[in-house]
Image (tube, rainbow, N blue to C red; front, side, top):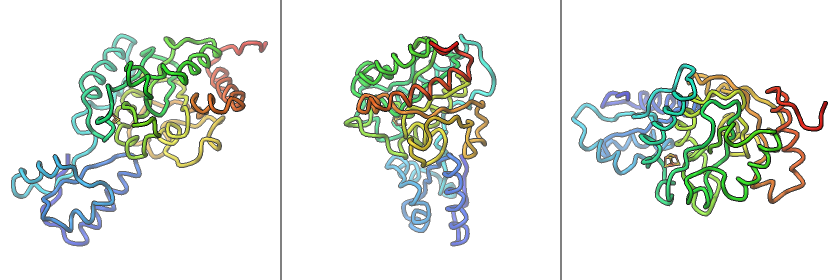
Length: 289
Ligand code: SF4
């Protein structure tokens, strides 16, 4: 948490707004909290986020001289894991992140319509992590990622790679089901990002397979379409996330299984992408000598 002076002149407000926007560009979101009477302060920071009702309450209760305050989105979360864990330690770290932080999370509006959070499943020290966009109806009901029709196709894709779900890790960029299975907004993905960042820091995969546009765009901090991104390895973390100190990996963007169910003609392209992953990891490709 950082505190800025109670009185800021126009130049100070402008500098604060610029700093907040730079931080946002780097993937660090802050909440601005101040007394509601400080209209100028709100005007300057409003493009980032309207303070929540609870934020206003906290600001009103704050002692004089402590407003406005900037509270990072990461407040209350454990630091990113900065060392290699063995499988038992990694499993425990994931369980703690889920139980202590994700299950009760109300950081974004998606919490209101979920049945339960969907954290992730699989091997705690995998070579590959598959990242989708968000839980659907089946996933929301069962609390597990990729268990509906798209999940069954993902399981077949993993089997085609001569792997099993138990040997990889599967999760999403948002842990709560977007209503009506809509695509999560960039704001929701960004708000949930600290959890995925912590998962990846614990899991330390060699390859992250980004399933579909929202996952690829979030992981690579880009707005490029999936048709342009898929099929080419990219380094992770991308420049916009390098300040976090996340362990390096390679990202392979490919089509989401739900899209492949709607467009089966694209399956061959997705298989080409997965074969590149196998080749990189030294996994023999069936039928190839
Ligand atoms: Fe929290 Fe993520 Fe669920 Fe939003 S989607 S409420 S940030 S766990």
